[in-house]
Each structure stands twice: as structure tokens, then as C-alpha cells.
Length: 168
Image 1 (cartoon, one colour):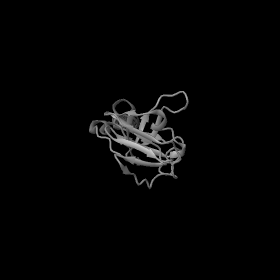
Image 2: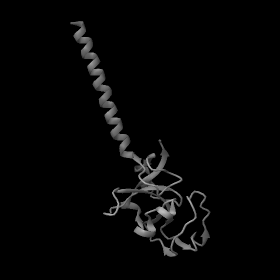
Image 3: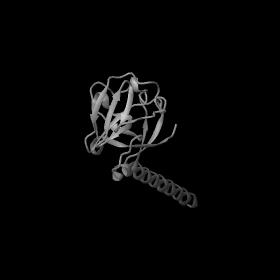
Image 4: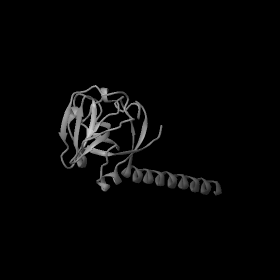
């Protein structure tokens, strides 16, 4: 009889641990997301297969995107298989973004982009980023599906969150 009581106690303890773990995981996943980088558009910062942690709850409540932050955005297109893309914020609402002679200027300032993969080889561009929108580009500028092609990203509806940590 004691053995049955001991087994029952152990089973109840295991169930308690499992339930607490599932509840904690559910709560944590409401605030953060674990994602895998797919593709090479952010090389050399992130590589295909890298696993990253994304702040999705607090980032939206800050409602304050900053130039240089790396974000995960939703992009729905039949031309790519992934629903999410990872990009760097280049311009925020009100910014004047210019690409001239393969150099990037934001609000008249030449950007010193030590993080890009190689010198850009792209068409010239001269745009103003509307309020509530962001202009994003990949660090692998010559191989990136970004705002030069897909246009502005709506901060409220398309940004999933900010990349905060590389796990692997």
C-alpha cells in the first residue's frame, strides 16, 4: 500500500512540474518569440539557420522604433516562402532617406555602415518615410528583399518585434 502511495505522490509531482512548465512557457512566449533566420539577406550580422530571440510584446508597447535596430516583420508575398523577414531599420517616420551613387544618407547625413556585407550596388532612391512606417534594409544589400523593393513597413501591423539576442 505504501508503494502505491509513493508512486501516486511521484506522479502528482511530475504532473505538477509539467503543468507549471507549460504555463510558464506559454506566458514567456506571449512576450518573446524564438525564430530561425532563413536566408542570407542579413549576412554578416546573421546567417542562414541562426536562432534568435525576438522581443515582441514590450517593443510594441515602447512604440519607439530606432534606426539601426534589427526587426522581424511580416511580409506576405507569393514570391517568397517565408511569412517573416529580418531587416535593419534604416529610416523611421519623418526621415528623408536617399541612396545616391551607392551611398546611404538619412536626413542628409552619410551613414557609416560598418555592418554591411559589401558596398551597395543599387539604384538611386529619394524618399520620405511616412509617420507610422519604417524603411528597412538587409545588411547584405546586394541580396536583400527590403523596402527598396517592397516599400515601407507599417510599425503597428507588420513589425513582429525587435531581435534582442542570438541563441545559436
